[in-house]
Length: 214
Image 1 (spheres, rainbow, N blue to C red):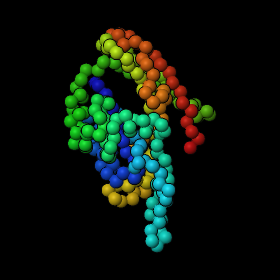
Image 2: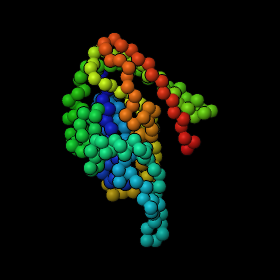
Image 3: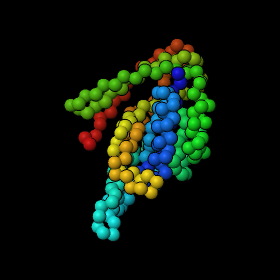
Image 4: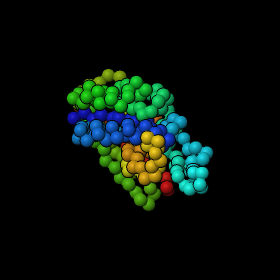
């Protein structure tokens, strides 16, 4: 079964981005594990404003947007490369420009490729050393067809269920559940080359990253 990557561009100050996130969750429930989704906080809606912690006219606390979800420079590079001009926006398996697809188009783009025959099988195993906060990933790939051209393997670190503030249709939501948050790359902004791509070829690649203390 082919896996489909949906990279959603979002931000905690984007009032309509939660609609996009809810649409991805709906699609994920339909596709039963075929969808791999990642939320990339980038662009102006992802900035931490100077007055990130806000109070109303009575001095009552109403919001706190001081958390910086951005991954720099990778997130901004993707944002620019895939042509995001408004949110919510997403690219489906990087086959489209993110600014050319509204919410309704996402399902159309997914359905167009969901029955494609996979060309490579990828297995992933991970190890975590709590004493050093090191995540190690071992990726085994096997080509199911011969492919020409250059192919890169891209490995991301994604954190799910991050509870923090979000602007949701003009409402400040304190305990919003941020899903599939892009936290880091393990092998650069555009990944690393896969050594060979002929039918039956197998490749093993290892990567590691040290998690920040927070």
